[in-house]
Image 1: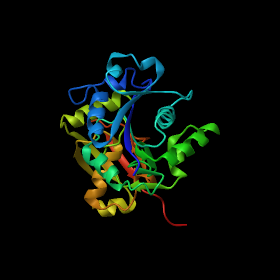
Image 2: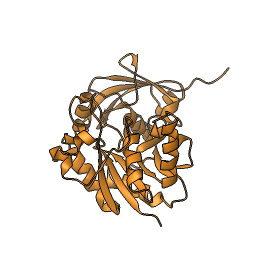
Image 3: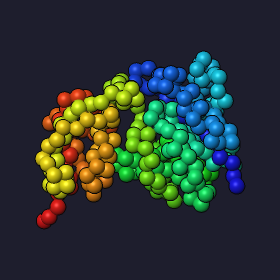
Image 4: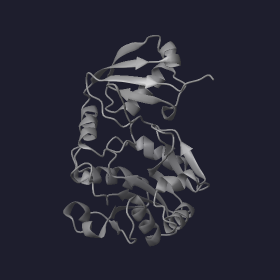
Length: 275
């Protein structure tokens, strides 16, 4: 049985947030420390992935580090550098900007890992595709990523899509939501504080039939559109995955990670059927 090591990715530049995401506080301590403390008891060894310019920063200097040893952009640099340092290990890779991550999500991921697949990952709540930054990467997957990067393609998600990846259903709504902008940070802080958002939701076609109404006022602790839909899907038994729907927010089409505010008007539009 090969060893399972942990890697918290903290080498990003946080350009959309405007400040270091690893240093943000959601649980009374910097998010990097929170992520490391959640992950480290579950693996044999745990490291923080950093760029060379970050290794002596006060926040990052206190952790065991793997410094990027490949000259590429994005999370693939951390993945490949970890594989280069310990090629015999499987890696549970975790983005540092997941403040809603819980132990159940990690325990389920590890429990499903029998080293029979090239990777184990969760299916995104938003588009159904593999989530590469809370996943277990076997050496075979990382060797394939080496070849993919050599061909000029740096996207870890594409590797998982085209590999023998065991996909799991998410355990906790919103647990894998990356927090990349000040608006998303405000939204998740509100949710963590238990503050409820009150908004109007409108349904069409089969969704209207299942909900038994055209519109309703909904209270939710979720701060983005995706988890709100999962809440309503569970309540009414909607048959559609989020990837098959369109969503509009206050009259404009929106993404599933769009933050919500009290007073918003949300419309879920199911796929059109018929000829």
